[in-house]
Image 1 (tube, one colour):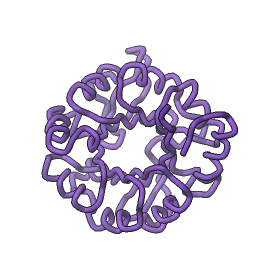
Image 2 (tube, one colour):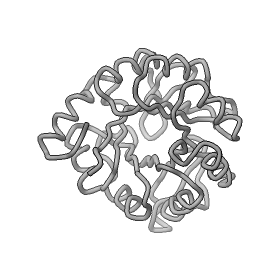
Image 3 (tube, rainbow, N blue to C red):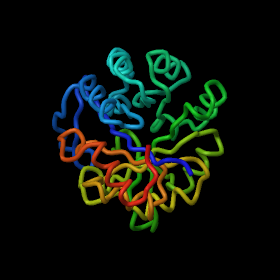
Length: 252
C-alpha cells in the first residue's frame, strides 16, 4: 500500500511566500528558501512552489527563486505558475524542479499536457485544477488565472481528459475551502479520486491534523497539501504525520 504524502505549498508573489483566503487578502508568510529548508528538515514528503501571479500577470516563473529553493531540498519539488510552453518546462526542470504544475495554460491548450508528458514522462506533469462549486450546474467548475476566471469546463470531465493526455498527477484545490481552515473538501476530492487512476493531491481547507485523516480515508486522496497552518506554525509536518500514524494511516 502506497504511503500518503504530506506536502507544504509555497504560494509565491514577487519573491515572497504569501497566503490568503479564497485566493484573496494575501498576507506575507516568509522567505521561500528559508521555508523550504525548514520543511525539508521537518520531514515533508514533497514541496509545491506556485508563482501565483505569473499567469495573471503574464510573466514567467522566477527561475532564480526556484534555483534557491531547489538547492535546499532533498525531496521532490513541483513548480507551477506561468508555464505556457515546452520551453518553460525545460527552464523550470533545469533550474532544479522535479515536476511542473500546469493549470491555466493546460485549460487554454490541453495539448500542452501531452507535449510535456511525451518529452519528460508523465511523472513530471502535474495538472493543477482550481475547482469551485457551481449551484446552477450542480457540480464543480474549473477556474483559471489564479481563480479569477470561470471556464466552461466541469472538473470531473477535465480530470479525465487531463489523465488521457498524460497527466501523472492531479493537484486539486477547492476554492470554496481555500484558507478557511474548515477541513478539506472531502466530497470533491473523493469524486475526482474515483474518476481517475492517477494520484490526487487534495488542497484547500486544512485546519488541523484530523483534517488530514479525513481526506485520506473518506476523501481517498493520495497526498494532501497545506500552506498557512504550516507557515504560521499552527502545526508541523511532524505533528501531522504522528497523528496519522496513530490513526492507522500509512505515512513515511
